[in-house]
Each structure stands twice: as C-alpha cells, then as structure tokens.
Length: 304
Image (cartoon, rainbow, N blue to C red):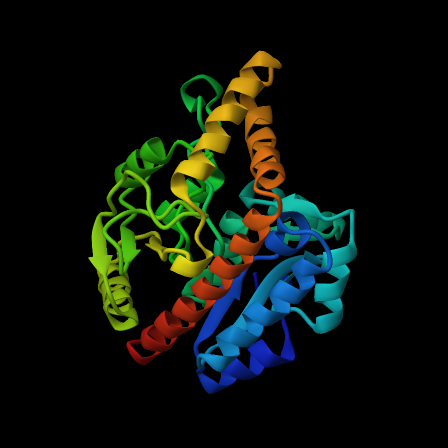
C-alpha cells in the first residue's frame, strides 16, 4: 500500500514530528471552481490551516501515486489542466495503474487520508441522495464512505439541490453521526439553515475531537459529518436559493432533463441565477471550514 503513497516534504515533516494534519480534496480545484479562483482559494485554504496550528495535505492522483500534499506547481497544474478525472472509490485502481491525473472527491479523499493516517478532512459540502433517487438510484458514494472510513469530515452541510431529508435518513441507517457545529439545524451549503435538525450539537473543537476519539476507541467504523454553517455575512437567503432550485426543477421537467442530468443542470442554474454570488459563498464557507477543521485536528492530535 505504501508504494502508492507519495508525501510532500511539508506533510512528511509533519508526520515525523507528530503534528496535526488536515486533508483537503482536489476536485474543488479541478471541477469545483473556475481558474484562477480555484488555485488562489486552494492556497488560501492551506494557509488558513497553517495559521490555525495544523498542516494542510491536499490530495490528488498524479503519475501512479496518491499524492498526500501538493507543491505550488502541482496546484497550479491542477487548476489549469482539462484532462483531470473526477476520482471516487471505484476509479482509484484504474487511475493509479494507468498513471492518469485524478482529482479526489470526498470519498476518494477520505480513503487516501485514512491510508496516510490522517483523521480529519475539510471540504465544502458532502454529496448525498439526489432528488428523484427513488427512481434513478442516484446516491453519492460519499455517504457509503462516511459509514466505513475513519475520517471526520468538516463541511457546510449538503447542497439544497439534493434531497436533504433522504440524505439524513441514509446516514442514520449507516450509523454516521451528523454533528451541528454551533447549530441545531443542518446547514444547506449556501445557507445557514435547512428544515432539518442535526443528530447532535457540539459547540467546541474539543467536544468534536472527544466524540470522534470515543467512537473510534470503541472500534465503531466510519467517520462523521461535522456540519459547520457558512458565516452569516456570506450566507445567501434560503428562500432565494430554494426559489431558484424550484424554478430550475420545473424547467428541467419541461425540457425532458432526467436522472443523472438533473444535478449538473440545477448546479448550473444556481450559478447562473445567483450571478456569481454562489462562487463567493462557496469560497467563504470552505475557508470557514478550514478554520474549524484545523482546530479539531489540533484537539484530535492531543487526544491520541
């Protein structure tokens, strides 16, 4: 297994010194944002993690290796490349064997983080059960990964283009705790709230770390969703975002857009109709998650 892992100098030194490390995905760079905001955001997020006492490890597939930590040049390359495969659990073996470029999703980043001994991962939002999944079976592999891979995931909840209720039901069935960080309601990515409650509310990084350590000490497999709301000043109005989604759903039906094509259509509409505000919100919430994630990683590291 170690032959497939390649560590950056910064991460290697952090491991040798026993410093807290935070995993970051690379899909947000290659598929989540346009250039140059993607590379700029990735660098700023890494620096926020350093400023808060931890070491960032952005994860990607390059030349037959799972890279744990990217250089500046590699970040730049990912931000510009148009031949980067979106990488989930099913794709890892193929991309490593063929030495193609791969940007890791939530699921693949969790797998790589666990292989590298990293217990905490910061992202924007998790995937989930898509609207209409009772007909399409369109369910993100992220949810299954959360049930079996021992990495805590700090995110801003799930996007409201998903079926949030069914996403929570799926996580409950799989025994994945959904923690509200300073909130009783599950945030919905661009907005601070949804109509759904979290399982547990915790208000400090230490409480989250203590919960995760107790869970893993018991041998209970799987991670946890640490749902951290977008900062108030950056949040979008819930009725505005939900109105866009409802309008887009009607438009999708009228145009015969079905199944797996619905989600990219909805995402495109949200981006178009929010006139770029959704990108600003996305950047703000990832940075906020990095601050919280670094604090939890520090506590987890002290509680080994």
